[in-house]
Amino acid sequence: MNIMVYFSPETLSNAYIVYGDEGSSAILIDPHVFDNALFAILEERNLLVDTILLTHANSQSNHAVRTIRKIYSVNVFGCSDITEDLFITNVETLDQFSASGFIIKPIPIPGHHRDSVLYHIDSGLFTGDVISAGVLAHADGSYGRAVVAQTVREILGKLPGKTWIYPLNGPPSTLAIEQRTNKGLGFILHD
Amino acid sequence: MKNPVPCPEPGCGKSAVNFCGYCEDHMGLEKNHRTKLEDILQKKTVIDGLWFDHLYFEGLSITGRTFFYCSMANMRIENSTFDQCSMTLCFPVSTIFSGVTFKKCKIIESCFALSRFVGCTFEDCDIIQSNFNGIQTEGSTIASCDLMYTRFIAAELSNTMFSDCNLKGVYFVETAIKTCTFKYCNQEDAVYELKNPDDKKVFFS
Image (tube, rainbow over all chains, first blue to last red; front, side, top):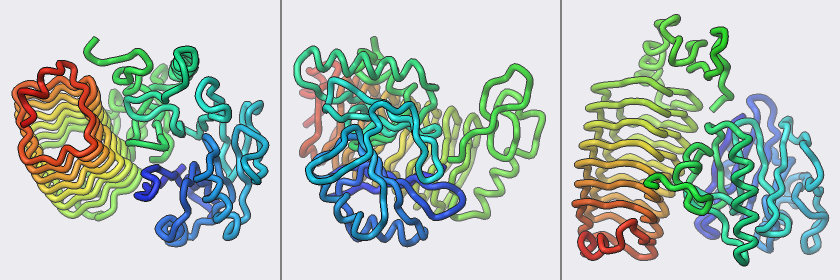
């Protein structure tokens, strides 16, 4: 698995391009903007986006998806059936699915957004805005926060510590690091 | 990074290191590993997707190299210089840097978390949106660097000087600072929730 990150200065968010060693098909994860710079990265490597994974759909990602669909023939996956006027493939009940030559394991996260989902691909975990380096997503109310924290702790317990975390916002991390420095999860190094 | 290959030693579940076939515990079985990586560092300008985990380097002088998507966990790098190098999506996690100088480097979206920096210098570097959570610094200097959106959550900074740096959007959360200097830094949108809140009054002026 090869990964590239594209940081958009417009939305201050990361989009990830995942592609294999052979072939040109690529997965685009959480595009919140589709601009010339991102298009150039794909073109330089002769990559064709045929899969989009959304960890949470919002107006920015929907706008980007509409643009991408004018250029590429893509399947869009998320944790709902429709977002605004866009139909997407709902992965909420799937243990795993296959796209662009990869086995993708969706992990829905209740308590944050209704359609929040993480994607586990090989040794990478694409966490959207649920987990960022040292930071856990904000959720409404103490119940929501507790549900998110508990769900994420359960995920941390099941995956290897060296699983790379690729968040929507902020720098990358690993599960082992989050287990030591993420205060939102109840872990903190000094304690 | 390519997916790691498991070490073939019976009962060993660790990942093999690049070009070795064995993990760091059993890499003595193949002695050419380190030599091969040193050769790559000398000859290639773009180092893509390699695992340097658990290696020890001393006296390196690396100029103009691009490291992309490399794992550098649990390394020990001493008395070395990285000059005009670029690191993107690299993971020097839990690595010990001692007497290392980074000069005019671009460190983008990389993860140095839980690493230890002793007597290190970052000079004229762009360190953008990188993860320095849980690091420990001792006697280090960060001068004329752009640290935009980088995080120092739960870090322990000791005898460390930040001089003429852009700290826009930098997180100092649960950060313990001791005898540090922050001089001529842009602190716009920086987040300070220090472990000891009084430290900000002492060290940020």
